Structure formats: structure tokens, C-alpha cells
Image 1 (cartoon, rainbow, N blue to C red):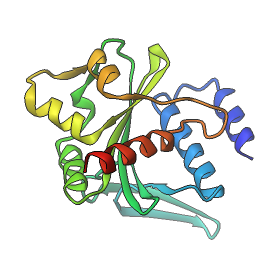
Image 2: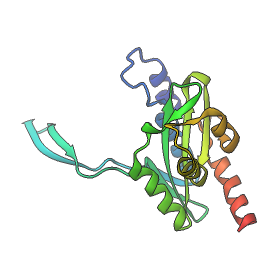
Image 3: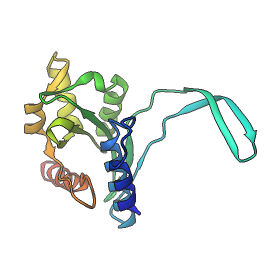
Image 4: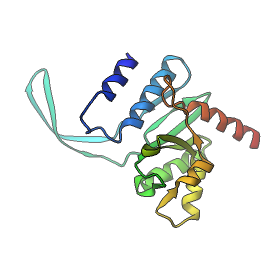
Length: 190
């Protein structure tokens, strides 16, 4: 089943889903983690208020209008080895930096709150043109923003402070391998 989903995604000629490849890979990885009893991580739904619905027939209901009720926080959350995990996933076509306008202020504050309460918060950033995906700890991400006036985070900073995420057949984006390293570092330094 997972194989068919991946093949269907890559065989599409429609480019309407550009920017969704990382999310698709993470969703497949999360499915693998869940099916193998490794972690329970889910994509958070975006809170939407539906204002207009049409019922042309009993079997076909169409949402015609709606709006975002409140800003969403981050993309994913769940639990792994008794630790709460919360993270955002972003893609960029830049080869030199990650533009900070890709992140909303409330998302950065949310990650800070997760860290304050002992959770594990991070950002997964894929550099599409370099075919590289990094996990950067929430603390390093926030520290960079606090200490710099730049409108982007240089690739070199992410490469130095972040962790290169291995892409595999299954799980496609093995970020849990890096979360294990973070847990070891925090328990060693704590």
C-alpha cells in the first residue's frame, strides 16, 4: 500500500502538489513508525470553520466556503519514548538559505513553549534543489533568530547546527533516528 502511494505521487505530471513532497514523505514515515510501534506522530489538522455547504445529493456534499478559525501551530505532534514531540516541516528552493518568511511568528513561539515544558521541538527543512533534508533543533532555530537580523538562515548554519536526515526506502525520512540523538544529548547534558 505504501509503495503504491509513493509511485502514484511520483508518476503525476500535475505540478499542483509542489511543496508537498516533504509532507508526503513525513506522512509515510509516520505511518511506518505507527505500524511498527515505534512512535505515534500525526499531522495536525488546520482549524477551519465551514460557512457554506451544498448538498446536491445524499452521497455528494460539497464545502463551498470556509475560513481559518485560528492560526495553526506546527505541522506535526505526537509521542516517542515518553517524550512529547512537536515540529514544523518546510521546503525551500533556495540553495543558500532558508527564508524566515516561511515561518510564522506564532509557530516560532509555539516551538519555544514546547521546549519550555520539556518537549522536543524542531524544524525539518528540505532544500529541494540540493536534495538535502535537515532537522534543526528548536533551540538552535530560535537562538539564530534572536541573535541575527537576517531575513533568512544561511544554509551553512543549518548544515553546521542541524542534522542531515537520511532518506531511505522505509521510513522515507528517518527523523526519529535524529530524535534519539537529541534525547541522548539532552539527558547527557541535563
